[in-house]
Length: 432
Ligand code: GUN
Ligand code: ZN
Image 1 (tube, protein in one colour):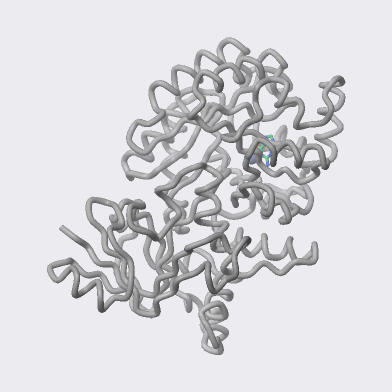
Image 2 (cartoon, helix red, strand yellow; image 1 turned 120 degrees about the horizontal axis):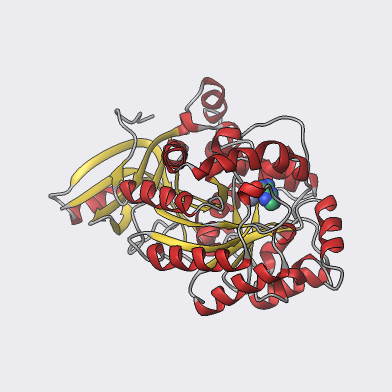
């Protein structure tokens, strides 16, 4: 059975950071996405697809904009309930708010409750895939993969490993981090849409032995992603220098323990030296831009120039980030780039939130509105509030029509979210 989802459609045919916009984007004012068995089988003008699939079940979203579902490349689902906690910078914020909350995930029932809550919030905001840190508790990894499986969502996640500089209840060891991660990896990696991610939290909370153990696990499982944090705040970088006096720089603490590679995801990556940028670029690693977190915790201004040299993903960093919304996250990315003298085009922002993040995760079947990709979609109402509608009414082209929703939109702009072709929001969608 074919489904046809109608609306405005916007698809990327090339990276808008590397290609002229007119060659990078295909827009249909009356477009359609044809879906069979959870995958996109065709996209194009609605009239043509209606003729090609005469028996299809049709859902018409009118003037609403159909995009690939947002891909959030760095979140901490266990921090859902402490998002927007006041007044601290990174290390104090971890000790005051994060670690006490993460300690609660020793209770599998609580882990299950928050995993389900997080995924419901993500879907309500148009996010169909995320790459998440769990806590040190293996049950926190089971919880998020089980919750994702009930929704058929593609989720990346891993047990957060820490064997020093964390409370007793949140510490593992080099050996148990290896053993637990290996067991979770063999249980979940490739089970349905689940992907396991090897997850040392960051250099300050792992001994060199633990970093080496996880580096060994990664070399034994080279098709897994590895995620961690890198050069987020200057105090943190000074601490890393004290803890690893022989390291050339922060990235070197990962590299010397087998934790630098093409499938590495380095969250924040703000205060990098030229050598660090060169090494990340040499190995083809991905950096993840977390702009609401970087302003909220006071970390610094990410250098978007890195898009010319390496894969860059976009992320909320829930709950160091101050929003579950990838729209709000695109707005923050725009504002941060403005502070560094660059105006990111709406197409570049949308690319980062979809295909850019998917490429960071090395996933080729999400984040794209193209035949063969999974039908994970977000449908945006470009006039979701009076404030946005009155601005959008003045728009002369698609980009002027979309940009107010990027800058001012939230979950009210999400008319529908589809996962594998299945609508995830109840009620009728507005057709603007
Ligand atoms: N660095 C190490 N852990 C964390 C975390 O949970 N959030 C953020 N923003 N940075 C970190
Ligand atoms: Zn993080």
